[in-house]
Image (cartoon, rainbow, N blue to C red):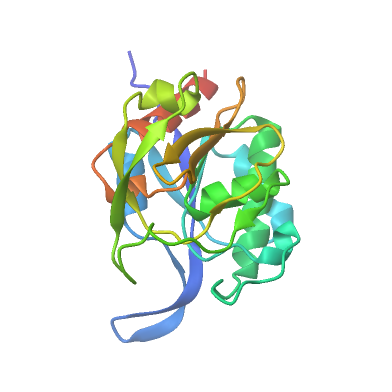
Length: 232
């Protein structure tokens, strides 16, 4: 009996200036830890660089699952706020493209995982707002920190990771007001919302931390499993 094809998981990327070899050019960038996590979890990873938002539904239609990766701060205008002085410069092409991908995935029922910025964008896409700065969730500039998160019993996240778990963190923004239909499914010790999700039958989960920087495959494996079920 032939082996079933691996689910195709799209991962969003940066669009930035980069140097390699003799070149210094605009590039679609993605830390290798993201595709490696997808691959280790049983999926095939494909990169989704910023594109015209009108192409989002077509892109999602070819995927079995979607990962919205970490990156720049979401532009505050997207949730009706003035920028805090500590908010980073906008990545407007990413914001528009990834918000359109999220809308398309939710409309199509495509399993969706938002990581850090991706979780924040999922919240904004559903009408939520963000805290533009908090302390204690980053070790230092360019240095990944860690802290424990506590799952909320009865949630999708708790069914995947039922215990208090130490997670890799690097963020200075977080969920303020939850978007429509979203539930907080994990918290940090200081009360920060660390995971959000939609109720079944949707499979849409956001985590504030960076699973690609750790050893725990469970969240990504669950996304890949959901993507695989969607192929049946």
